[in-house]
Picture 1: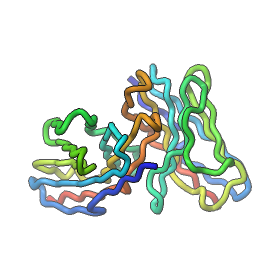
Picture 2: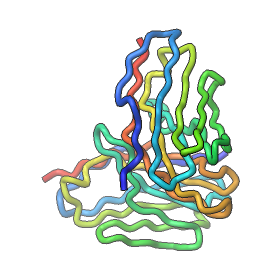
Picture 3: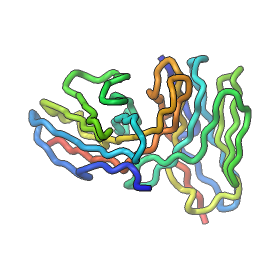
Picture 4: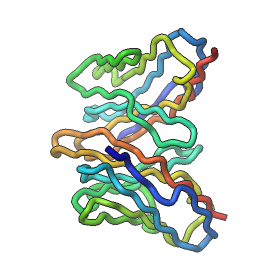
Amino acid sequence: GENVEQHPSTLSVQEGDSAVIKCTYSDSASNYFPWYKQELGKGPQLIIDIRSNVGEKKDQRIAVTLNKTAKHFSLHITETQPEDSAVYFCAASSLNYGQNFVFGPGTRLSVLP
Amino acid sequence: KAGVTQTPRYLIKTRGQQVTLSCSPISGHRSVSWYQQTPGQGLQFLFEYFSETQRNKGNFPGRFSGRQFSNSRSEMNVSTLELGDSALYLCASSFYLRQEYNSPLHFGNGTRLTVT
């Protein structure tokens, strides 16, 4: 089955700096890669996603890149703000498994003012 | 549009008891999935329902079960509770278009289950 690794597990940045979180997946059949942000006491919230036919996607300060050959995908947050502090999860899914998503272990991002 | 609603938010149960959690998906979403979240194991897939049928099941014992109703609302049940079942149980719905196209999950805020 699919296995998703995520690094780093914790990340501290100064406000205004950029943050990068990296994930790798094992199943070459995976074709959809969403990213979620989870704040304390809440469920994960979708922030951006990318499909395997696209190499990069941007939404304001957030971008995701995908390297299918290397089975890597990354989340990039620019101009970080204190409200970006949260736990971020990457995930992968394959049509072989339907709506069964495999999540990475998470990255706790702290943005220091 | 209302989000995914899970009830109750908190539950405290004793070992050996059973529990039922409820989930109301986003209007129009027919796929409902359940995940268990723990500090040690992270987010783990329990099962997914679509049109009242279980389509996928994760690697959990048979004590964990679920069902979906004709209005897409879903419940999950855990019988003979164990201490290790203490976790945040998350429900997620999605607007599943077709088998060839996975859709993003939209999560509720979860039910925090504590087993003593």
